Structure formats: structure tokens, C-alpha cells
Length: 225
Image 1 (cartoon, rainbow, N blue to C red):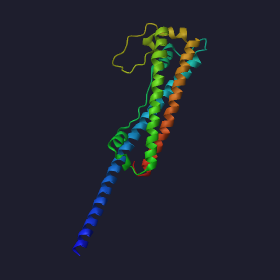
Image 2: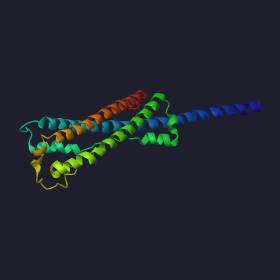
Image 3: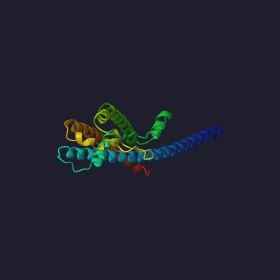
């Protein structure tokens, strides 16, 4: 009889330990899911910002193409320079992976119960790595094509893209020089190249945004808002 009591006590103790461990893992999983949601809300915001900026660039390149064949441009010299300045802007998207990195490095990734979520996260970050490679490839055009063209053909101070208003340059000396190159084939080709790069990246970002929204939807199905 005493042996039965001891065995029963051990069994109950093991059951309690298993239950408690399960509760602890469930709480830890819940905390991770909340943090994943925070990361993906931030990723969504970053993607939308990048898309908005590149769409602005695209509209500017289209406007420059429209102005190129005109005998007399309908845009002012300052407007032409402002739009062309965006040719040197290269916004980038780097996915926030804080929680995913912690999960994979700590070995806690298996705490996530949803196989669909785990597969979606793997797909997301693999796609994000491709975007980084595409961005790096396109950024090479900045130093290999766009900046040399500006230096050789335009007044750099008239078409620079300013990020800090606290340190303004003096007024450009040859602001109107853009009119000398506006109608040339090289100008149109440079603008078209920027349009091509920008539309390519916008397409990449839209695909990533779909993956982002899919993961957010999976989290919301688990009550993570």
C-alpha cells in the first residue's frame, strides 16, 4: 500500500511538473508572438515609407521624360533640378528581425505552435535577404552611373538631395545648366535607368508587403493585436 502511495505521488508530481512546464512555455510563446507582431508592424511601416518614396521618385522621372522633348519646358529650372535630385536618392528596406533572431539563436523557435507561422517567417526573411541583394545591386548604379553623370553634366549643388536643412549650401552657380542636357538622349537614358530601378524595387517591396500582411493576419488569428 505504501508503495502505491509513493508511485501515485510521483505520478502526480510528474503531471504537475509537465503541466507547469507547458504553462511556462505557453506564456513564453505568447510573449514571443507579441514581439513578432511589434516587429511586423514596424516592417509594414518601413515598407510603406519606402514604397511612398520610390513612387515619388518614379513620378519625378516620368515628369522629366515628359519635359525632355519639349522645345520650352513647362517646369521651371528649380522644379527640374528638384525632380532630378531624386535620381541620387536610394531608400532601402532592411527587415526588422530582432525577435526572429532571438528565437533561432536561443533554440526557442520550436515554442511556436503554428507550423504555418513558422513557414511564413522562414519565407519572409529569405525574401528579405533577396531584397537586400537587389538593393545593393541597384546602389552600385549610384556611384557608377548617376553621380558621374551629375558631376560631368550638371551643377551638383543644384541637384543634390538634401537631408539636413541645418547646413545649406550656397546658391548654385549653374542652376540652369540642366536645360542644356534636358533634351539629350543620355539624359533620357539616365532618367529611364532610374525609373527602371525604382519600379523594380517597388515591385519587390509590394511582394514583401503581402508577406508582411500575411504574417500579421496569422498573428491576429491567434489573438495577437
